[in-house]
Image (cartoon, rainbow, N blue to C red):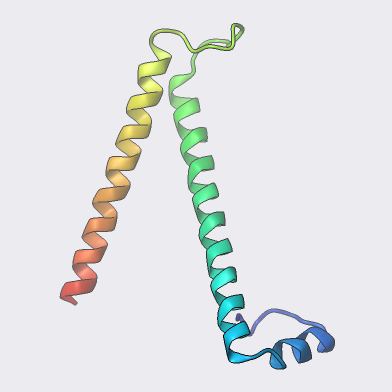
Length: 97
């Protein structure tokens, strides 16, 4: 747990009283929630970026026009390609260094 968080004395005491297994489960839960938040932020950024780049007309029919749909698909594909390239490179650096 982050030691910089402000906790009430009661909560701090309750955390101290948890078993090692419960502390591990709580830590895993917090890490999973952090990962979910990171994924949500990535999806939000991707949506915002591709929408601004590709949606040029007013959406009145609830559908994208013929040029917007392939643009959004390409934008998402390139974003995912770039992310995977960075992840692979970072993993290589980690295993070599």
